[in-house]
Length: 259
Length: 239
Image (tube, rainbow over all chains, first blue to last red):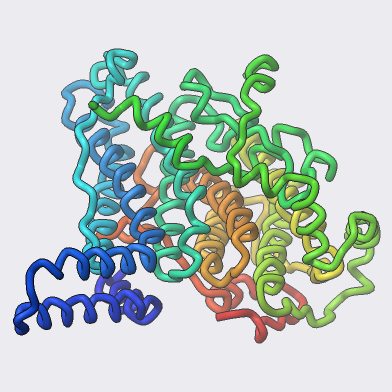
């Protein structure tokens, strides 16, 4: 994947962003070159920024949301891999692969945001013990695995929940989908390391906070009942992953943010 | 999992509630030009037994969102037909874990296939005929290798098709399915090369960006066509 190509694609697809950028630069040139009174600046800035926000805030909001989740995952796996004796030697390659992807997602999302002239959100401080609830997260492999599953499955649901907001930007939408499926590959592997199925049956929370799997027991898809088509509730729910809203995700991920 | 948990956690997102409200449900089917009675007829009248009457007819996927949904329906038909064969004639030495995984996947693909058939109603393409003569169903390597190829292809197809949809509800539905295909791909890949990095290997995920494959319909169909007997017309799909 060529990042420059993505950026040039964004340029093609979202010409608005670039128009907006150049008009903003023009505005600054205009201001510095003219004798305009500084008092007028905040008013102009305000209206320009509001206009810019209205045009691209949906996309950059989603990108920053995704970036925050990737920061969390990236930090989590780096800490896990750095913790001596936590991950068995013969399982390290699995987590090195996940860690590599989460780091790449952070870099990628930041790059896209910067190309869209938006400042990426800063990395928050994380507390993976969630205030002591998972005190042994980096000393007990089973706890580490459980949280890994929680983050991967939540990540899948979080991306899914906001994909529709990217419908007007084909390039960013496709990239988000390309991250989404990677998180799902991770989730399946980690679940199977915990002797769970790679897919989610009903709202089975497998010992994790129930909010993470709330709604996964849905069997209605696009108005059709999958169970009415002759499938068990298990198969019907496993076959379709369900989204989470930002509020749902914040309620889950919020426990791991230090206030 | 227990019943108490299922009952006490029925909360779903507002977006989902909207989709599932009776009005939305009716609208979904109406949008596609079908009544529920008609979609029920479509299921009854499209048994595999009828395939001979549709044999070798050109299948036109159509245009717009419907075309993309039919494209997904075609791929789900392919996967479902493959796993039905893989499960009904297990390769020698198939472990119980492998049987369980392949049976689960078969059921998921069948559910996807039937979902699209019902959702598309009268706009649905016919049941397509497949040729799996290149697969040796007695061979573990052949079956799992084909499964891996189909799952990776499915993931790349949905990833590439998302931006070709205009309707947010269809995009969400595609999103609900693609992550399950990715879960399958991961499990199959791990069966082939256990506890390695292959479950999310560098052959499908670009290391520098961490992005999975995304392919456009013509790329995907050129791979899938080797298994499809019917001529597929995808000229009118959005691009």
